[in-house]
Length: 571
Image (cartoon, rainbow, N blue to C red; front, side, top):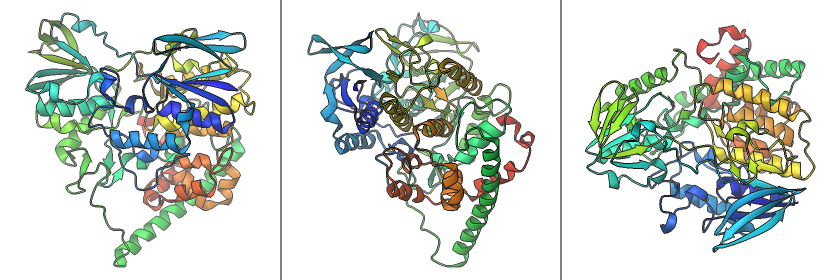
């Protein structure tokens, strides 16, 4: 089939690659001068949404990499420049630029009988081209949300975080930052360092996760398949609609979990013996790295960039997280903020926190709902983006909500010929691998190797209801999915690239790695279409499981108990 791809950022690049793997003819349109999307920086980018100067990824490159171009080495957090170079490597490796028309802006997508007419503006000239299918990969970060009614009468400067590059323009000013997410955390820290006065205004608290734990490891090292199963399947009576390792068979499930108990105990014992060996035999313990995953010295220990692992910072993080759930529980029902680098700025007073919300503004004066007020020179809006960009011409998503699409990406009204790739946001995890798996699925649907469910609307409704339950505290994040692992596993089962349960049970080493080891997307290249065989296995086994022994023991023991014993905060 001839397929149009809109956008050559991280999602568009992998979509091109997966479509080519299935033998499709691909034409990608991108208005930029090169690949990379928001990661591409050039002199003419103006106020476009772009990655800011000092950005570090909030998950390790291990989980931001594609499964067909894996990152080899310890988990570290790439800088903006390093990640852009990775995307360039990927484009070069698979010769993707040969299929991209740069400087081309898609202005309309229109359905005509059995084909799609795509209108494109290039060098001021409008042209149209016919395609059999279309994939929108331009991402949700397009239209900044600037509509804050309480600031309508503010006469000073208002800047959206999408325009932020560095803190120089805020030096010596009185700055109010409204809202906060992962990029907002960096912006708060950087502006707090140079502003004459800086206030952070929030209406609710998001759940904070440090990027680093145990001084030397990334927090996403703790993303474990058995843990996600425990949180979102076993520990709740709320119906789970996705197929994963054992499918829908109760017998298969019982067998799998029984094996997991045995191997969990074995993993725990082996890990404990290895620790004992390292203590008793000189030279056996691995040398501690000099730098943590952020590229800073390991000692003194840190949570994040410039964020010491001390009582003051930790106590504020704990207090913040308790307040992220109004009912007093800690249920993970809100998008995580995997960046705590702003915490020291609040602890030492460089940034003043106000959680009452804004009442009104008048001139340069801003009044908060707790009656506090202040004179402000510049307001920075970290208020996210609007969802109306989930449409191009006639191709529209109902209510601008990707949960009205099958698996967050396939349009239910066009027989699998229209997809919105990458409009998905895991609570913790990377968008690129989600986009890759969506693209693999899409490519095989177009090849006729995958059939969509007959009761498509019913399936969409069931999965939407489950996601809305688990993301109830993030009402604006309609693209959010509670578990990247379970979402990807469900896609993998349909694609045919999920390691079969039988293969796992017959190979205890593989079982332990996949169930108790740190999540690694190489697991989706071991078997199935376009697999990488032994290379994928080598990448998977490159991370030892012995450091997950506590997780293995805890998950194994919980399998033996009724779900009622599970902590209330995960219900």
